[in-house]
Length: 181
Ligand code: K2U
Ligand code: ZN
Image 1 (tube, rainbow, N blue to C red):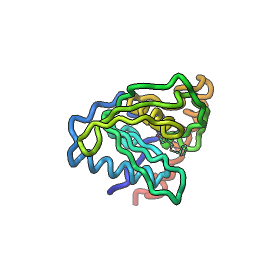
Image 2: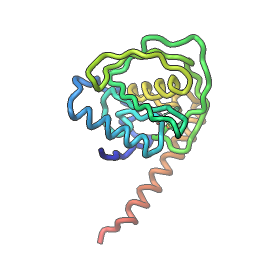
Image 3: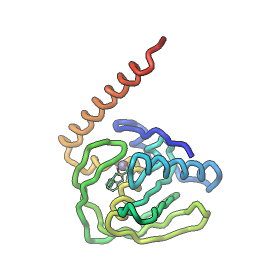
């Protein structure tokens, strides 16, 4: 497996609608493996294809909170939302593409999704609690939507400016780290 760099907002690739995955092949299996490794390394509980620059409709998640419990990695390919609850809940969300920024987002508290698994089979499952929040957060990524898009324009602009500053600082650090000899 290979750890892949995670794109940081603002990046046009994080705003694009991703293409369906035509078939589950070795390339997709390798991508899923790398995405799970990158997610656990971050650390995070979800990661979508566009966050590692792959504009395909695939995301991974593992929302098991108990460090002692066995991980429950999930790979969802071409996911569709087939039902959402009327009830909503509020969760303070973050994003690996918007580091160290958190804000409350209201979403349906339960969601049912259908997807193609790595086994090539169709799956359908109903998620609740953190799994539901994470699945909807990742599904949004596949449609070029970020959790900051649910915020007011002032807060969104403030976070975007912080990320632009972070990217400038990382670029400067990268330049000085390996100066052209
Ligand atoms: O897509 C991502 O950037 C990974 C997200 C997934 C997520 C966001 C909000 C709420 C639930 C899941 C996170 O950055 S993973 C980090 C994290 C860990 C525990 C709880 C919330 C966020
Ligand atoms: Zn995210």
